[in-house]
Image 1 (tube, rainbow, N blue to C red):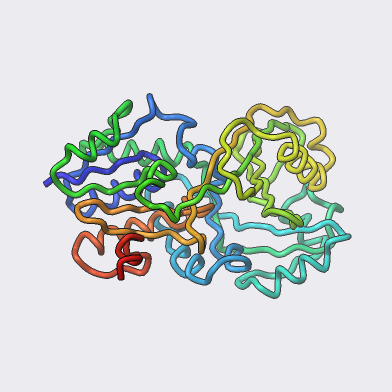
Image 2: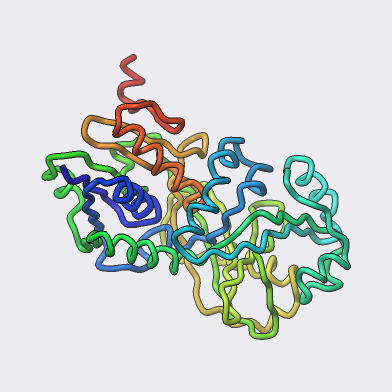
Length: 334
């Protein structure tokens, strides 16, 4: 029996490919008119940074996320140059506090920073270098996943009525719709994030650079050809719509703090969307009859989607998985 995957964001595509690689017949449907900015994944940073995340997230994020680097590298272009964490001089104590919560890094002085990133020479006296981390371009990665699925005869059916398709399908449905699944997953909430993409030919970076920020994890990710993604604000809000003045100013201030040369950068794209998250900010695989919900990846879509997909396979085989979760109504009745 064919497995229906509803939603063609990173969770849906990774799950569909994992199922197809395991020998399942798969069909993917999505409500969007075509590939583009309708999915939260479109605005992702694409950082595969399990050790940095360990400083602020539950330990399971690092433990399940570590294997994602190899999973992605075996299937799409991945850059394995590590990650750098820096802070302005006034926030050096915050960098030290971050280091006490992190692992698998080395301290760098100003000379070592300049050796890694020449354009940051003289900008920072200390940094944390996470040599084993990686990053990818999310949009290119999603295209590559679709290409791998197409080789197996699976293409995304865009413009679908997801509710009707899920109801009509007689077999197993994997619900990867993100925030659209909130009626079935009432504990799901949206966490608003905003991002920018700029073009600056005068500055070059070889790896993601995170800047310690008092309100949100700010990062600058090189995308090649002088393009950089800057993200991402984090607001407990389910308001959709364009980027805000506050978010834009925060991101641009962080970019300028990283290097004043970015003042001449061109802002070529802005974006905002809602990250689907549960109260503990961890994903859940919820089996509800013939529907299995895979949701709540928060800001770890690319880092944790391979682990979530593996757990979906476990649940389909009737086994418990680490991210397995009982449906809310069953918990309430119990």
